[in-house]
Image 1 (spheres, rainbow, N blue to C red):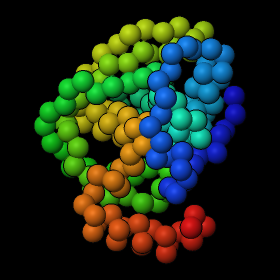
Image 2 (cartoon, one colour):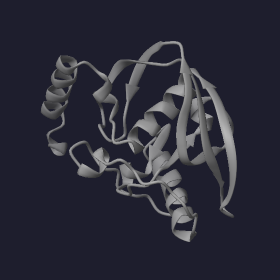
Image 3 (cartoon, rainbow, N blue to C red):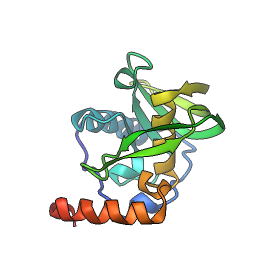
Image 4 (cartoon, rainbow, N blue to C red):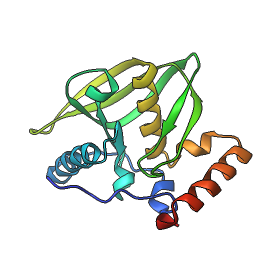
Length: 174
């Protein structure tokens, strides 16, 4: 396994609609393992494949830090099938290091996906019922594979002000 480079806002791959995964091969298994290592190395709650430069519908979640389990979860082709409620919490992103802001998202979601079990690479169709931080993490990562960053969910003025401030404070990413 290896730690991959996390793409930063401005990289075009972050805006791409990711491709559906139709076959799980050794390359996808290796990507999932590397993404888990990368996510932990960056102290993240989740990571989408396009954040490491691969426009595929693959996300990993750190269930232990989310408070939803003991292991990491790998999801292939996740899709939100139901959401309800409203919750405002602070949110950040590994692709915009150091920027955090309050963001409204649904409190409860249901997501259908194929769960990839590592290291063997077996698949299991699942329906996840999640609330609070678990729901937020799922929504955040699914947004990524749809080419959406969390700042896109802010109103235009707030987004522009926050990103301008972030660029001034983090010239290394400009």
